[in-house]
Image (tube, rainbow, N blue to C red):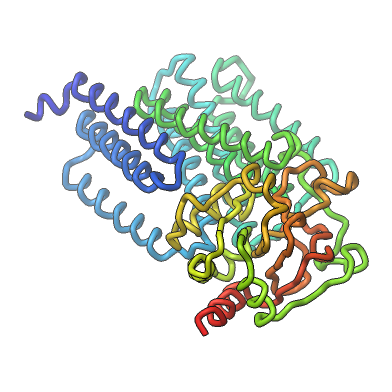
Length: 466
């Protein structure tokens, strides 16, 4: 039996089956209704691939394999259970970083532990070092910005782009020496190996530090792609087919998602990485620029909602911060019982990671059929009686279509300003994540419902129940 399990035929057949599970699971992730199942299928494929690899290569004893498996399950289950939904973007950033550093360590171990390596192996090692290093340090910066350990704004210095370009060419030169091992007096390829890791880590910092908060969802998607590419390169390093396939799938899907997010912001990837949204505005909204602010209380808001035939909810990071998704779902159900049609407009870059709002609403058991994209709701926005904007400042900013001087001009938005009435739930007049003014707040049909989003929504729920 052990001879069969350790045979190359069994290993390759298992890898093919695992790859099929990856592809099928990835397909399932395309819909919120099947995403959980797709995640389970893909995870099963990876578990199979890991177990087959360990058994086939007789890497460690079964006792250590069992211990590692149990520890991994405990750590993963604990992290998944204890992490708050508001901290999910930070967790995703850390996972991307772990993928990058794992690939870097695989490449390092192969380079330092193998005597003679061919051109292809050395090239693959170079790619694991440079991509893995950039992914690891860049993901740590993303984690720092999302968790507010680092400032969410752009962190730049004079000549930063020039330094980045110089460091990149230095890294390429070190990589060439590592691969071709050409003669340099008194300079060992090991020195190039160590310096390459250092410059890869620094390049990751220089790429991610200038990224402003409004661009963070795009960078999270890009770093996810980098982690996949690093894993694929690591597969070439250790000659493991399933790792090559899995890394390529993650890398390709991450690039596709990054492209989708860039289109949602009407910006190129180069513009996001090298020309992040900058603002000259203060941290608070300038009342002179947005017009007269018209506050509303919960009782008056209830009366308007009670008479509404159609309501559109536009969630943003404010909903995540206040953990209001369950109250939002309850309010939606009460509105439907009152004969009102309720839908949820999800902008691709709402929140601080791709799919952030979808995850929150799915957790609250909001029907997938009610989740709509901007292209679905904008054509009928004039017929919406009430649009409830919950902390989604930038993705509903009319300046994106009206003000050519705005940093977000041309970005497709959810055109909430065209609805009959807009309720904007905010704690204060602080600017959005992009740090720019929002004229929606001063529109004639806009009403500001100040306070914590969860408390405000719960107050409306209480009004309906009474």
